Amino acid sequence: MCPQTPIISLSIVLASLVLCTGWYIEEPLNYQTNAEYYYPYPVHDGRLIRTKHRHFGFMTRANRPSLHSSRPVRTVNVDDFGAKADGRDDSKAFKKAWNEACSRGAVLVVPENRIYSLKPVTFSGPCQPNTAFMIYGTIEAWTQMSAYEDRLHWIVFDSITNFRLDGGGTFNGNGKKWWQNSCKANKNIPCKDEPRPKAVTFYQCNNLKVKNLMFKDAPQMHVTFQKCFNVMVSNLVIRAPGDSPNTDGIHVAETQNIFISNSDIGTGDDCISIISGSQNVRATDITCGPGHGISIGSLGAANSEAEVSNVVVNRATLRGTTNGVRIKTWQGGSGYARNIKFLNIAMQNVTNPIIIDQYYCDQAEACQEQDSAVQLSNVLYQNIRGTSASEVAIKFDCSRTVPCRKIYLQDVILEPEGSGGTIATCENVRYVNRGKFFPQCTH
Image (cartoon, rainbow, N blue to C red):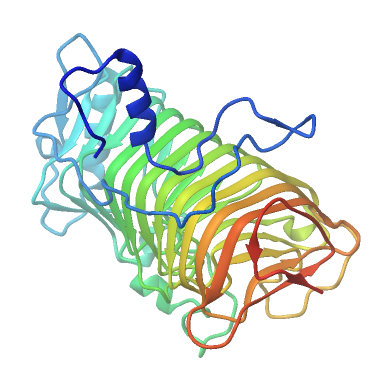
């Protein structure tokens, strides 16, 4: 706490505010280095980062919905449309309640202390202004696989603008049966995985807020944002076992202007995954583990073109994950991933704390080496500290024909979790040492 005196001038107050804000790397809008606009950060002093996320896991359960509107808030309760919460399918009741709320610009309410079972359902827009979905209870996925006709989705919010999903409730994907039918979890079955449904998908939604919710045990990805614009995500808790296959926490695809904050994610795959078409992505105050870390990619599969730019991961804690911060691309792809910043990150017992893998190959047979690759450039790693569970703490495995360019490391210290030491391997990478980092690159 900053000291106070009985009589303080305005100038001292302003100075005190600056001193009390802490010492994380911040992001001024205009900062030039070497006459080239690059990463807008002042030089950090190298002190060990703190990762106290004061509001993690806090679920807001409002007594009544509160929307920014001068008119009275109208509510629609799913129980009034026939939802029973008795283990039988409540999908039709939810769809009727949604149609009413959407057409009136009202708030659909899912009462607390009740568990509703839903088959696959799509909540479609466009809707009247101020439409919202407040979940105080639990919505769980129907367990009979035959109910999933396309095998790709459980709940979809489609083409809705100025929409909020909130309430402190839970989406339970009941994914165990699906995982058991995956060769990644069950080595005794042929590795020809059938599609598994994503738990909650937002498709072509604009000006969207998703906050104060729990997602658990998705058959595949937990929360997916696809072709969305202007998204605020905060205070999510996402949980699945560490061995559950492909259960990414938050998946960002073809989405622009998305801000993810104050969320605690532990799954069997990436805590956050960002793929092609995504731009202006920020993830701040994230706790990750178990899982595969925070990943950009995979990009360029099946010789496709990928475009990802302007990604910031700032203030994250990763514990016991198989990767820390990762960029992964397939050979044969094209396009780019650029202007990426990993800042203020704490690693604890992470197997691959910092990794770029341009030879990613997630398939049974070996991938054929190809000349083309997704171009990776302007990537900054700054103020990253902690321990590595493996000897190789930093791995840059870049394309021979399309090397990684402008890789910046500053104040990066990664030591072994136990005895021994750590090394960095850097293949086909053109990096710039802007500050202290350890271990140093070898070839």
